[in-house]
Length: 68
Image (cartoon, helix red, strand yellow):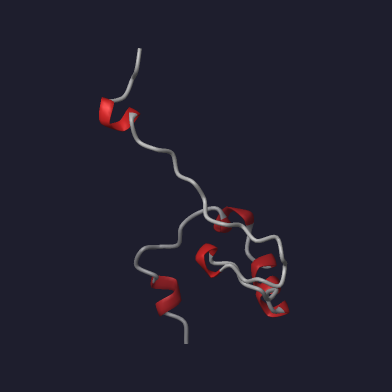
């Protein structure tokens, strides 16, 4: 017994594109960055509590906009 409509059931599954194994290739289609983050970024992330990292920021960005 199928739980989805016939047109859904007949869809072909997604087939990912080529995944080169050469580490010199930057795969822009997967938003990869070939460079590590700068130390200041790592320090900024480390200074934020885990609860703040797992939630979306305020949609109004009030805290950010009030910074001098």
